[in-house]
Length: 471
Image (cartoon, rainbow, N blue to C red; front, side, top):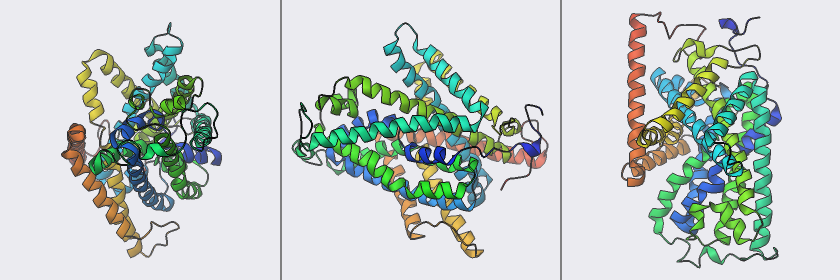
């Protein structure tokens, strides 16, 4: 057998074990934003940031419920991009698929650089770019070999994150109730003793929702990964049913302890991050080292997932003839090796742009991904609305359902639309929305041009029919 299989064999292997998918679903939502970035949201909204996280978390729960309904009915590695294709048309699946791919391609150099920075602080004789290159190369190789390798790496990365959070909750809980020796703080007074629970008003809480919302990006990966497991419907159902307690435990409870232990206007929250500031307040030795270790695992996990997710989305686009046909090729182990290499290559180009081009160039590239999470959520909700009505009309029996349809689906659509409008008039997020909007229009235009070319010239050099349409 050759390295690249025939067109009929270009399918993904179902080698993810239940424990892989289970741990991915538990810790997939946990990124460095929880350990470090949450400090920005706390300093912005004060203790009322809990409302921001609760609102953003509730939105994610609703989105995951809608996505799970569609994914259980039709598991696919293209996930919401495939469903948008079926519900709204080829242009929608093309657009949201390429936007999502672009988002994760940009995540790769960001997370690799973050990991390299931490390692460089420990080993200053090795340059940051060398660590960045080595980590990216290692995870790329493991992703090329088999999806089981991705699952195994992610299992241990996720397990470390979960154990770290549980230990933090136990120690912080002991400190709050005065059971931790040598701690500088106890009680819940910091929830209200520094200018009140909502010191900067409701506007700051709404603004913090925009910050916290992007922390949850990645929850949907489990619906992509489950397509490469033996029983995707069961895995997706279990993951979705657990999303509420995961958000409540990992985010709400940990942030609750942080704002209880540390005044919201403490300068270290922004510079050092929420976890390091809280651990120092509790007089935990080697607080910075502990947080650096946890963050290193978190960014490596995110980098691993970015490589996996971007390649699977590119593979799905190729299978639908919306990306170069070569991207659908798989190796003996059922891994889309061309899609992995193309995604990694695009990420390295972004790294080069960061080093070679003026800083404003890379900042613009990052800005183009700023509102993609919201667009993905919006497309999921609209696709669900359309597909659910189609399935009900066809008399199809659904094994998993969204709550209170269509009311909650419409509420989600209106809520996301309102957030996008707020971003448009918020100076801090306006550039991100406009840049993402410009990129979206460019991709839509590209889709229409390619579609017109296909109608006039069916066989093209780059977009050719290699297999039957999976939809």
